Amino acid sequence: MGANLEKLQQANGPINGESGREYSVSIPSLEDSIREKLNTLPPSLDELCIYRVSEILRKASESSYSPQLVSIGPFHRDNKNLGKMDVHKRRYLKTYLDSYCQINLQSCLQNLRDLEGRTRKCYVEHISLNSDQFVEMMLFDGVFIIMFLLKFYSPEIGDEDPIIKNMSMSGAIQYDMILLENQLPFFVLDHLFSLAQVSGQYSNFFQLTIELLRDLVKENTIQGGNIDGSQVKHILDLLRSCCIPSSLRPIRNVPYSRHSTVTELHYSRLSVTELHDVGVKFKAGVSGSSCLLDVKFTNGVLKIQPLRIQDRTESLFRNLIALEQCHYPESAYVTGYALFMGYLINTPKDAGILIDHEIIKNYLGNHEDVSTFINNLSKHVVLDNTSSYFEYQELDEYCKKSLHRWSTSFRRTYYGSPIIIISTIAAILLLGLTVIQAICSIISVKVPKKS
Image 1 (tube, one colour):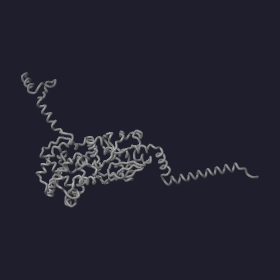
Image 2: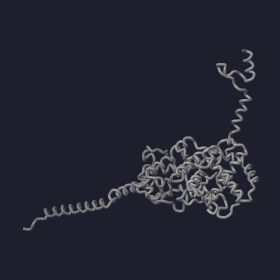
Image 3: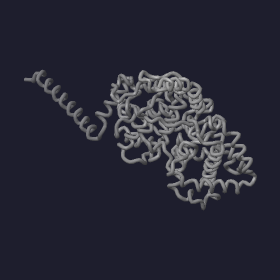
Image 4: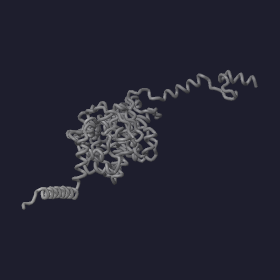
């Protein structure tokens, strides 16, 4: 028995544990195991831009982050429910090669292999696909996006396509393209598009993608003129760039709490109804702006860009917020917007006022549905105190002026309806007549009668 123990110690190192029955592996083997784990880490953070949604966000709305029809990139590649689109990916690749004869498949694959290393660095996780599998994924998924957009926005080439003809199907694919976990780097898509040398209205991929985003944000005219295309990470990242105003100023950070008092929240954290009661007026649209998140307050008027709320609006905002939580913690403007709207809308009545002023275009249901949607958006998110798009100072000062509060309250109380107005006038006339009658009585008593 002693001889056997000695051999085990020589082979595996010293005995481990007080019981004498657990043995450690050799240091060289342990080193190899650790190095293998280290080798599976992304080699660089410079290109990192495609993330997994955190569990705490995913639990709030699983469906908002998961593709319905098509997998783009490696994260949902093994989802069998999305495998039905593989035949369409192959068909779109054949159309791509047949329609643009200048494309040489072998050269295309070689170009993608040259981009493989950079592409892998964009994903937060180590991708276990081998080189051939990864390049094939880049090709099929990238071409699918390009051909779908070309067919969708060029009726002459998309008329007979079964996906394009099916509005439900094509709409779902549009939203699948903006999911954080369902992205290919923009430089891959741009490269594949450039190989096709497309002529006509959509001669570059950037402009073609802008058309997609205009469809997703219907109430605002998306413009990409002031965006540096070389800095765009992926389609969701471009959507974010199009939504935020070009000039942004930091706000003072105020902890968000539904149970905070008005004093704790300051006046700018009042709800729509409360702002309305202190004389603030509301107007849809910000002059000269096409950015969805733009908000301005001037001369007692709070101007907010129209927001279209429908079934898939939640997915759009949740993925933008998830991107900011991972990649833009110090400039989380969409997150700031969601918190701001959460302050404004506490109740269905608040939602109703914004709907009446056409700031919210409600395609979701009743006012309560809108209120619930807005308040749920900002749950479990963190806002860095340097992140904002709206300066509250003017709104604060306006709300703090007692004259505005008093005069508005008086007008609403006494001049809110014709009945109150008539009653007030009648009371004043009655009071006047009573006073006159009293004066006449006094005069008649004091003036002596002539004998």
